[in-house]
Image 1 (cartoon, rainbow, N blue to C red):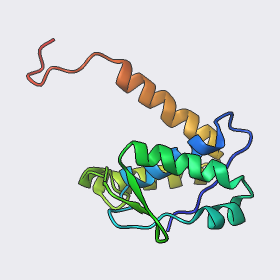
Image 2: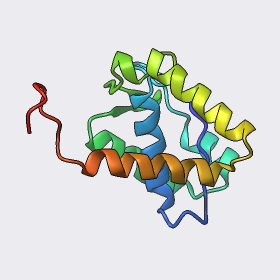
Image 3: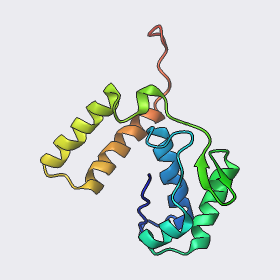
Length: 136
């Protein structure tokens, strides 16, 4: 089951943090079709946020077609987003995990690792697409 972590200093609305964490869990294969999200009461107990915030996040996820609320039963995942190459246990996921562990052992803090990864992602995705035949 997913456990939400709310960062009140993130500058991101709390309901959106929940939405993003569910989307990320779906992309990484941590949540799969049929999995149940924690109830609003469980999220409130673990994060001390307003229950309406949780319900707003779940409505947004339902609007995106990712979950479905079932009266009296809870909220369940209805669609997967993960591709085999994006799971934590894929070759790429394992290589990235090793890189992050090495960065941490080198003394980098989480925010420094995130900044470094973001910088590389920004560089990679702002470049024009590479022609498959090597022609530009």
